[in-house]
Amino acid sequence: DIQMTQSPSSLAASIGDTVTITCRASQGIAKSLAWYQQKPGQAPNLLVYTASILKSGVPSRFSGSGSGTEYTLTISNLQPEDFATYYCQQYFSSPPITFGPGTRVDVK
Amino acid sequence: QVQLVQSGAEVKKPGASVKVSCKASGYTFTNYEIVWVRQAAGQGLEWMGWMNANGGDADYAQKFRGRVTMTRSTSTNTAYMQLSSLTYEDTAVYFCARGSLDLRVKSPGTIDGWFDPWGQGTLVIVSS
Image (cartoon, rainbow over all chains, first blue to last red; front, top):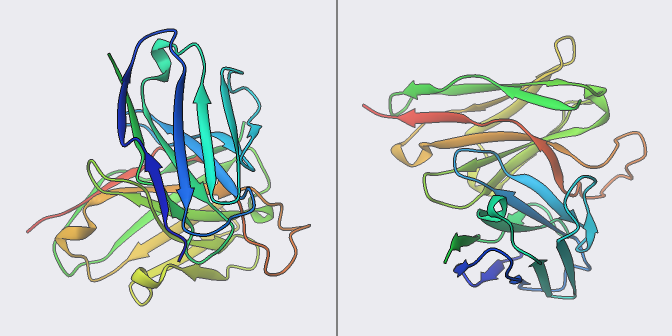
C-alpha cells in the first residue's frame, strides 16, 4: 500500500497569508494526486487533480504542484472561507486508494 | 447539476448490518464508478471500495472484505453500501462519491482517479 503523509498536521494563519501544505507518498505516484477541502460537517470538496489541475470553479488562489513523491498545495491570499482541513489522495495504485491524514488550517 | 444524495442517519446494535443508499442525478449513472469513503469522528478519510455502476462489479479494501457489499439499481440510479457484523469502531460518517473516469473510455485496469462530487454523508452509529 502507498502511505501518504502530510505536513504540517495543523497551522494557524491570517487573512491574506500564503499557506503551503506538503503531501509525501511512500513511493512515486506520477502526479496521480488530488487535493480536497473539507469544512466541519460537510463532505470533502475536490480542489485539484493530477497534482496541478484546478477543478473548474475553484478560485485561482489555490494551486498544486509537485512530482515523484512530494506534492504541495498552496493557498495565496488566504480568505475567511479557506479555513478548513485539507486532504491529499493518491490514485496511482489501488487497492487501496489512500488519503493523507489531513492538514487543518486555523485562524491565527 | 451532478448530485449524490444519501440516506439518513442510522443507529445499529453491535453485530447488526447497515445499508446506506446514494441516489445519483444529473448524469448518466452507468457511465461512472461510485466509491465509498468513511470518516470516524475527528479522523481522516478511509477508502472502503468502489463499484462499477454499469456492470456492478466491485473491489473492496482488504480491511472490509467479507463484511462489505456494494450494489446498485440502474432503474433508480442508486448505489448501495451494506456493512455487516458492525462493531463500535464502525461508528462513522459514510460518504459516496463519483469516480472521475468515464467507463465508456476507461481502459481495463486503469485506476479511477479523483472523486467528485460527494454525497452529503450518512452518520452510522453503532450502540448497544
